[in-house]
Image 1 (cartoon, rainbow, N blue to C red):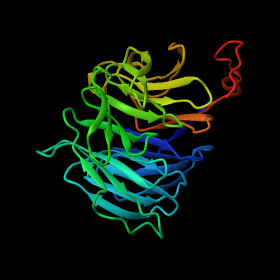
Image 2: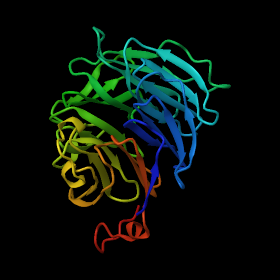
Image 3: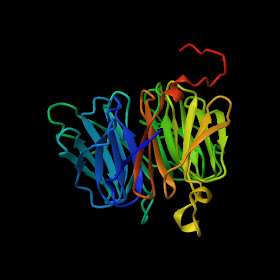
Image 4: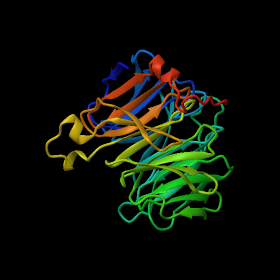
Length: 334
């Protein structure tokens, strides 16, 4: 597996995201720039310029028509994917830490940070997809402040009007959008801050990673922990592989707490774990710093990782990966 090295950022990566077709990869970083790349050859298609601070988060709709981004300049921006034009900007009192489209692309959820006397807030905006997309409503359709620990990650679930959140204390919860009430929560889902959340294709389960060195798969309706993957390093990201029973985990000691770093010592590898058997099956080395974000191609053809070193590495899986028998001689029919 020879990686394609994408060099388009001057500072560490914060999030990477494939589009629904898997032909484009969006990356954002602390250098204020959002890049979009062709996944098959690593060519940079273009940039989205306009943010004035660390871009923490991006998401793209299922048609690859609109992209949404949130940054430390307290702005949420809507972009035209094809032209790179910023269509609309929402402004908030604090930084936008996480954004996500709903499954039907009609809504966007965003988390703003708890800072300077402002509480952590979750807002949902209706996206007007008519025309150019530059006529958006300034006010959120729903807004609420989660009680207790501040939210760090969020996503829409398969149930209408319910979002899944991960929090700084390690808890995960379900919130009703309209009323803002906590429908369900699991206070002890993780022992430390939840760093990433990625939904399965049908949104019935999801995977979270945490600084408590573990990743967990949760049922998005009952919040039951289905599987747990425990590593020996704080995790920044976790992704589910479609078509194969693997989860990909990435992390590493914080750059500041590493004194002398060899590649092995800092543990800057992407770890592959068996989703069902909860065993580690392999590792891929490469980054010269902690891995901040991992994404898997929606058809499971490749995966990409973004690191503290400012590089995105895209790995196209070899034939041996597709021919592997994760259940031994047992054939699983989809």
